[in-house]
Image 1 (tube, rainbow, N blue to C red):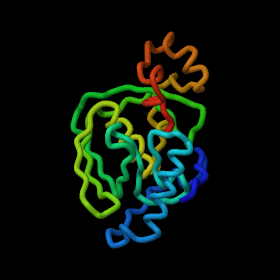
Image 2 (tube, one colour):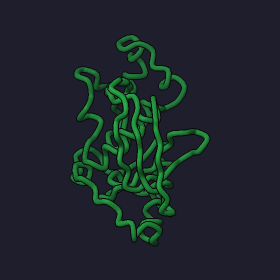
Image 3 (cartoon, one colour):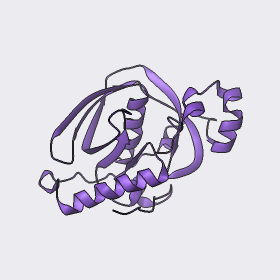
Image 4 (cartoon, one colour):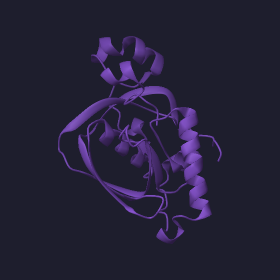
Length: 185
């Protein structure tokens, strides 16, 4: 449909708690248009995911890839519940905070309940990188950016992270093979 401008850190829409989608509105032209725009925008920006507030729509919708075989998914009104006390650390980036990376510790596993664009329930249990992506995207729905959770002294510019990150933090397998936990979403 359309590629939308991504809100950058400092824009008030990124700090608001997004409104839930009325279940009666799922499937409406307005919601379908927003979902199509989110998918076009995340594709254009080559992101791992994108939340509606990032395109100036304070609505509880995210698009993200948690399984390469399934591709980009759409979650409406997602609710995440941590299912592990173990934490995973990864360098995260964000389309709304371009050019920076920071080390974030998140629960290693989460339970997801959401609604798909056809109004069907989604129930998933995610571990590892997919759990990280899900938490990052859903944080946007609550006005939270990854920089709010970054480990002290780990925030770095992407170029320096690529150049010096392994020396400072050890190998980051994902950043060597793809833009994954270091991917902007």
